[in-house]
Length: 445
Image (cartoon, rainbow, N blue to C red; front, side, top):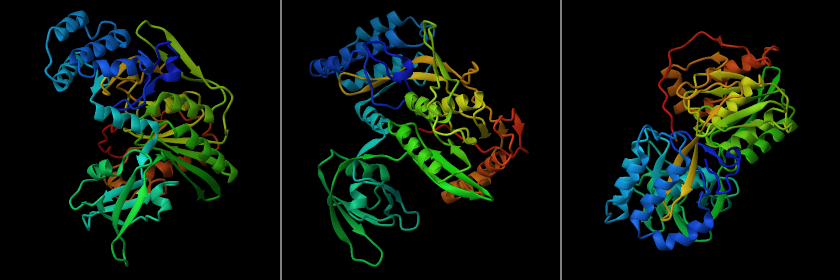
């Protein structure tokens, strides 16, 4: 959702998110400006307020500012004295709320840092996934990530984290533990671990920058067909590279077709969705954006597809934004058959900026349309083959994730059936399997 002072292509720097915009950012004022003024302005709440106003005034997609007198808003904001940054933050949020756009919003420094970490696809820590075990109520390792300090140190799934740098984790929440574990790369950390069959022991590690996996994949034998199943959880900064590796690896294993699972994917980087679309299609339009001046820009495939094998895409009500760009491109170009339930329906592009005190601002800068000109905002994409999960089925998959992407997963099973149909490559239009009762699904980010 970013763009530069040089007004580079929206499609090169813009970012898409679900309920929240997610990215490291390029400010319109430029990184040099930000560095120079940060020291001077960090203790000036009024200057921060005006910086936010200026960004919205320059970029916001709706030139009427939701029928608000934006100049009067500035006068009102600058007529006040702010005793603290927190007071300025409240005033900023109140002013942005008048725009009636949940995607144009202010983030305090902690929220902005979390956002940029998420979309960068990297984290500085030791590389573990954790949960509070429902039975033991203890903080437990789910997995150690590939190429991480945790994996190299021998941390295993099922290990209990009893203390972090001497601080007990008893009754500690996962988020609080994560804050203690994350830190600057190169710094030390000590975990006290409990492992079945062993005495508790301390393990010293050194934090590192770790690429967070957003793509998982596997080869599945479905009757006489070899199917490459790829699940993409988010369009992060490393998503395109990870997708490229997945497609190439599965292609080398001589798959006959692919299933791309975008269910629950809330979006992320626009450029990542464009790059991934180009891995699946040689020709055709991918997306068109329109800014507040009405300027239109279209991005197309560039004959760099990695495969032409049959493709099915799985979506649901939590597939949003960048997920919908990718789905819309492949659906409109009849490159894939789309299976599942109606997608979320977010067709807006945000620019994200780092502000003078380390806080951040997301501003909606454009509207996007699918290749056939469809506006999916508040509507979503209708799958070629609609199949809703019952609440019982959703519960079963949520409590036993190993069933996702198997014949026990009704939407995946329907995708396999579609791939077995030789005519599926010309995507069926508005086919519908026998509807099941729809389960509730809310956008997450």
